[in-house]
Each structure stands twice: as structure tokens, then as C-alpha cells.
Image 1: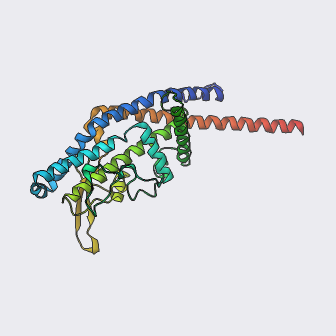
Image 2 (image 1 turned 30 degrees about the horizontal axis):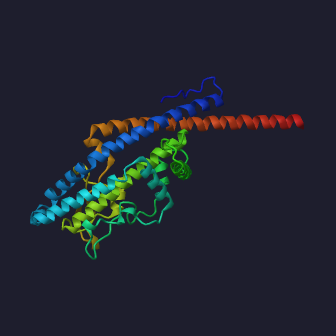
Image 3 (image 1 turned 45 degrees about the vertical axis):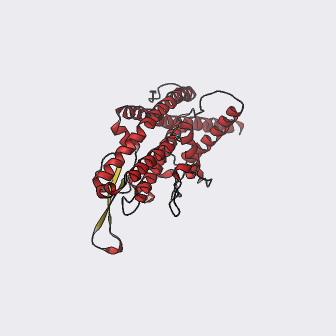
Length: 327
């Protein structure tokens, strides 16, 4: 997936055709890579979740955990597994990109995971959890993360429009019984944004599961309060400093309210793809390959933009010369 960026003596249109061919080749490589990544993640998510909760309850809430009855501990473990399992249902390329579209549109549709199985009906007054769009998810702005990765911050909404069209095409094909791989953009800019959207949606899925786990632990008496979703987002986006903690756990210190000269320590679960990659070298290897492709796509996108600018300049020069001849 390398491309000659030196320019050489090739005409801009020839180089644009080469870039297009490289991008189409990249699209064929990216999709199975992401599927492999998600397949491994689906296998490792529940064990990683239970390990993180083990670290949290044994190191920070041992007394509370020891005071739980056998039945309460059994219910807690079953509930943790159930929440992890519900998240697994949404870890596919199609569903992640569908979530990215919903995030961009601030979709107010009912949450798919609000429906809890009869085996785990919540008691009156409990908190209803959603893995789809958790509370306080409003205010998503794609420019917050796209500006760090692309030259044109307006590109992400355009890519979301392209993704929406892709889903419409895919739905039509499914309705007609046409078997074809999930369609993807085949230009470097579209593919780059496609990867950004996929990554953001995966981060949001894991964050939603983390919030659900933290609420479940709180309901069983572990912790004085649930970590606010806004705090989880701030840590994920690098806007809040976190203390050293085991993988998939979060520890932060915040000033005590009411202006008292002290701090409070908050601990909770925060599942992150980077921590999963730290624990599992195969995921780390795939991520390195994805990042390499993304960097190549970004270089191709910049080169494509330069070539299009050259074509525009040549066309303007030709138009000017034609006007001179006519006048």
C-alpha cells in the first residue's frame, strides 16, 4: 500500500488513477482486517471484563464483596456476563458504522438494549441501561477528533453522508437477495474517514459497556457513586488526567465538593481498545497494520488533493488563454 509521492513526470490524471487503484486495493485489505480484530475482541471481551471487575472489587471494595451472599455474588457475575454478551451482539463492522451514523445524527430512536431479559428485570427505581446511546451522549462533534487526523474538518460529516448512502445501497441489495461484501468507500479520503468512524464507534461501544458495568457494581454496593459518563469521555479523549491503574480500570482524583481542602478518589471500569491490545499481542499487531494503512491513506488523500488543485490550475490557465484568443 505504498505510493510514489514524488510526483515525477506523470500527468496528474494518471497519478490520480494510480491513487484510486491503490485506494480500492486498500478497501479490500481493510475490511477483513477489521473483521479479524473484532472476532478476537469478541472472544476476549468477557474474560477481560471479569478480570477488570476482579481487580476492582478485590483491591478497592473487598469488605463489601465479602459481605455479599452466595446468591448475590452469583447474580452479580451472571449480570456482568449478560452485559458483556449484549455488547458482543453489536461488535461487527456494519453495526459499528451504523452507530457512527446515529451518533452524527443524534438519533433519538429508542435504544435497542433498553429491553432487558425477564431473567434480569430491574427492581423499581433502578437505572435503565442502554448500550446503544447512553445518557449524556449528546453534543457529539466529529470535528473534535477528525481535525487531529485530516486537513479538512468538514470531511467527516460528508463521510457520514457517504456511509448513510452505503447502508441504503446495502439494504437494497439485501432486499433483492444480492450477496456482496459490505460496501465501502473506494477513495482515500472516504476510507480514512470510514476508519475514523469505525474506531470512534468501537470506543463508544466499550464506553457504554463500562458505564453499564459501573452502574451494576454500584447497585451491589461497591462505590459511593457511579463514575460520570462525562468523566469517562474526558479520560478517553485525553481531557482528564488518570492515575496509574490495571488494564481496563480507571482511577482518578477529584477535588472534594463544597470547596473543602481534600480530594476524593474514584475507581471504576473503563474498557479501552488500547488496553485490550496491550493484553493481547494479536490485536496489537492488527492495530499496527490498520494504523499503517491509515497513514498511507492520509498521504494519498493529500497527494490527491494536490493533484486536483494542479488540474484546476491548468484548466483555469486554458480558459484564460482561450478567452485571450477570442478577444
